[in-house]
Length: 350
Ligand SMILES: C[S@@+](CC[C@H](N)C(=O)[O-])C[C@H]1O[C@@H](n2cnc3c(N)ncnc32)[C@H](O)[C@@H]1O
Image 1 (tube, rainbow, N blue to C red):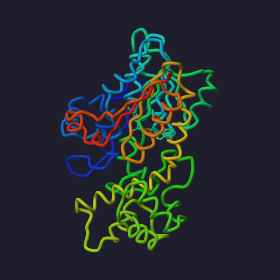
Image 2 (cartoon, helix red, strand yellow; image 1 turned 180 degrees about the horizontal axis):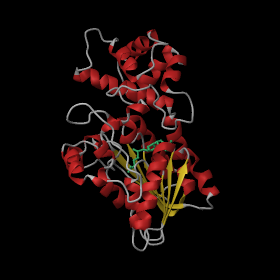
Image 3 (spheres, rainbow, N blue to C red; image 1 turned 90 degrees about the vertical axis):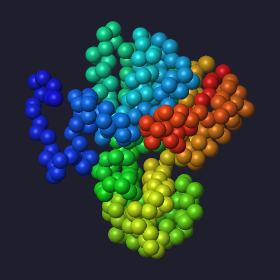
Image 4 (cartoon, rainbow, N blue to C red; image 1 turned 180 degrees about the vertical axis):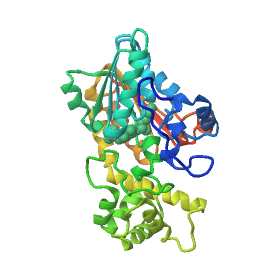
């Protein structure tokens, strides 16, 4: 349903009885207008196209314990699910600064949040979107004249909008240009990076970033097809060629593909360096008694968060930290399979 006064836009035509391509799923992209269709997608454990289901929401609200009037930072705004809940909890009088390095999704999410704020009787406080890498958090808070945050959330990695959109080139399940950049205005695409990286460095990246045992063979197979890797399918075929007799349909092969794509994406976006910088700057961004929660999705991320919080506790930069990672409950893992690998850790400033 179009807004009153907005021009009627004809929906995309598709073949068959159901839309299959990401861009054709017009009901999911406009899920607020099709609640029954949304319920069906959620009931089968899927994520509606063009959206993201916030993970560990109750656990995050419990550890961040937001109260009215506080200053919150969402380092990874994404679809704004966590941010919207935090804005509600810090109202009235609170403010939320939302970072994302993905300019495309940041603009969409900001528009939705601004509209929700305007629709809320009494208002929800203020919202400031920031298009920046979260490693620049201290500098960006200074620019806004903000001394510190009472609570900071970082939900590391990719949003479902990014994974599911073939145009972004993140997933072996959907063919698209081999891009993989969260910030499309910055740095080389995956195709450009793969054209330049040495076979040895690629093998190290696949092994270290994704604990992939066949990293050497995969790196060799990818490098043998250098110059021919323009799409996600080209890359997937190169990886499968490292395993004679294997096909895309093999469950074990799908896991290899998932790990290899993850490892390459981490390099293309400099994800570990950004996370290390964020962890280093966090204590300087928190007000006294401020709380930080970080949601990670694989061991490379979790190890970093655990080590940094432990070192911060030792150095007196934190007063207390999570002794164990919190996992999403069984109900959430069943309802949203994308939550399965999530681990939540928190720390509190002195
Ligand atoms: C898992 S999603 C966050 C989902 C969000 N919590 C929600 O409720 O919708 C992660 C988001 O963080 C962004 N991101 C990842 N690394 C970033 C970085 N270094 N700096 C800024 N944004 C980053 C991604 O572009 C993506 O939009």
